[in-house]
Length: 83
Image 1 (cartoon, rainbow, N blue to C red):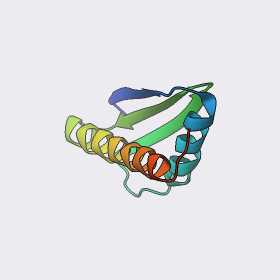
Image 2 (cartoon, helix red, strand yellow):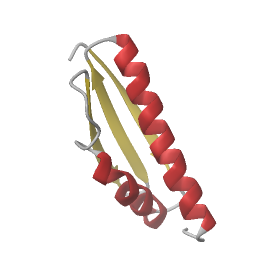
Image 3 (tube, one colour):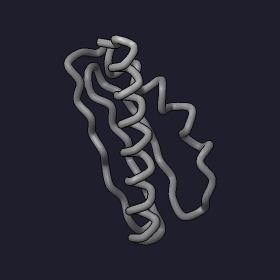
Image 4 (cartoon, rainbow, N blue to C red):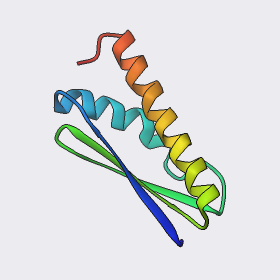
């Protein structure tokens, strides 16, 4: 892949980061397409997603997808009282 970007999300504590990580992890490898790939990691209170893409259009789409997935995980966790 010719292009990459890293999304890093910091949370107030490792429990919150773990909840977000577990919410989005099933999507790694499940989102179809041969122009992008993503990897996910968590270190304490930070969730990191690296998106790689064959071209800039695919990179933008991948970043939008992962940003949206994390946002939904955050809102859902907040709605159920996750810390």
